[in-house]
Amino acid sequence: MDELSVGDPCYVEEPSLAVFGIPVGKVELAGVIESLEPRVAKVRLHGTGEMIEVDRKKVKKERLFVGDRCVVELDRKKYKVDRAKGVIQRLWGESGVEVELDQTKERVHMPRTKVKELHLKLYREETLQEGLEQALREEKGGEHQAAVEAITMTVRLGNPIEAFKVLPLDSERYVYLNMKSIREDADLANTSWYRKYRERTSQSFAEKGMKLSEVDYFASSSTLQESNWIYGGRFDLNAIREALRRMNYDQGICLGAERWNTPKGFPTQQVVVLLADTSILVSSTYEGAKRCISVIKGQASPIYDNQEIRDILTKSPGATIRASASPAARPPSRATLRKPERYERRDITYPLATGSFVEKADSETLVLTEIVMYRDDETAERHLPIVKDYIAVNLKDRNPIEVKFDCKGQFVQSTARVRVKDLSLSLFFL
Image (cartoon, rainbow, N blue to C red; front, side, top):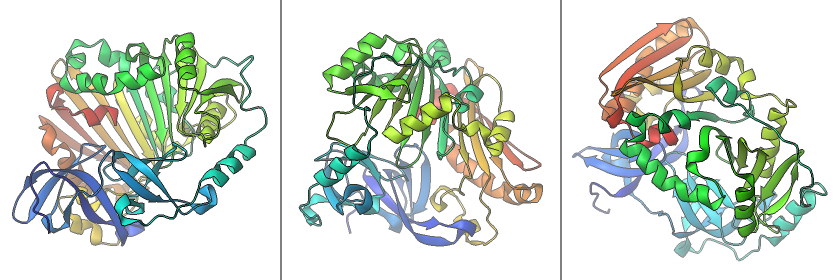
């Protein structure tokens, strides 16, 4: 067995949870070793920045790295092949691996167990061309034609409620961010975590002809397979069009809106929709873009129509800088609990919804609010100790000044005061 060291990239093998907390299969959580003791290790997960404490025997040295060539197992119904080669683009804590396929340049999100190092030679030399041609044939006629007259659709994103009224109903996680509040607040704009965000994202915005300084609001919905982002602000549409042309994006119309997507001959892996000079939609799939536009046009239901999500937002604090919510949330992973044996009981119930909110208290302090909604009063009260346990682990490295818990009716709520300087990049932007 390889000797483990602090700072090593690693992954943690944990049982996955089904309803009632019964282990089914396993999940691999990717991260970096922060500290080692004889029997336990602390690992900071990629993607969320969350710190977990686990049995040292479950920690393995990382076998996958960004930039490595690999083989992924694919859905034959969609791609017409079982496996394909690609390059690893990103590792996530619990969500898996993002891989760019060689032949299509499509980025797919896969569980870690479906990604193998290339030297294992598990792939078959099959082409994806058959799948690509079928995907193009299935697209509606005229979608690759140049846009002549597109509809302007202005989207309001001034607060979480407005944002959740334009995001599709069928996603797993929703995030709202008031970029303008951060940028115009000297206490927040001068933090190390915001500087890191600017450094990491400025280039990707510039590639599309956008500037980070133009973005006032941001809203997103995501699943493991798809992500949608809506940006609100003031944009130079001609600069964006010119940048997309340089990258050989195809111009067309999607449900009446001006649409640009990755070049012909590839399954759509990214779609940019110019809704208006104040609103830009970016989606990882063509279907995702259509769902978002349908919601914006009032032809499909938004996530705000979900009663549980609406109840969570109603209880949220005002003047929110950041908000996130998930419907029908699952219990926390065993790896995020100090006492995972609590989850070995059969009386664990899924929350109906969860929400997380960040607001500024004063020049040095932020207030973090977590809200968990259960099916009834008794269930909420019974789960209060587990929620406390989970919140305590999550806040451990953020040095909270104080943490308060409240259980009223179906809701368990925690309120933590944290110093601005102790926040991490992942709390806001991931």
